[in-house]
Length: 96
Image 1 (cartoon, rainbow, N blue to C red):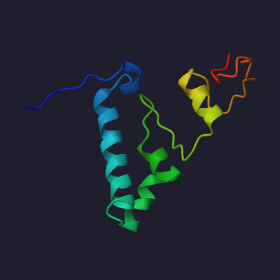
Image 2 (image 1 turned 90 degrees about the horizontal axis):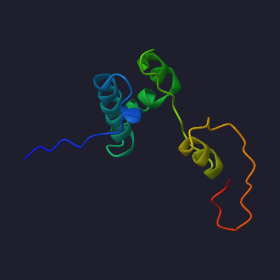
Image 3 (image 1 turned 120 degrees about the vertical axis):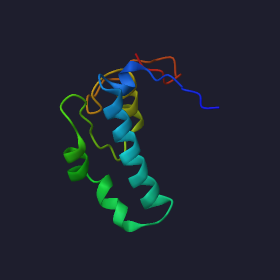
Image 4 (image 1 turned 180 degrees about the horizontal axis):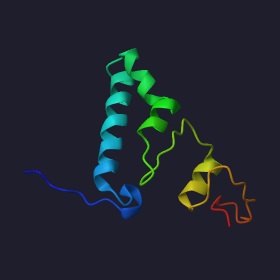
């Protein structure tokens, strides 16, 4: 029984087929590199290949790591590199 799980439009962009192609391609490269331990797949996880794969209708960027603050920015719709002062004085760490 195949069930389809709907994804948010922001995740798949204007071209779901292209988003699926990206996901499949990067997944094969990731699993080949880190699960199957086949080093020849590593090149497909590099910036040059991702740039070649990326299309104007749905561009992709390679992210190797994010600090907690950068991740919070991305979750809030800001670019990862934007520094927003933490105005949270409650000690909960939820920011402002």
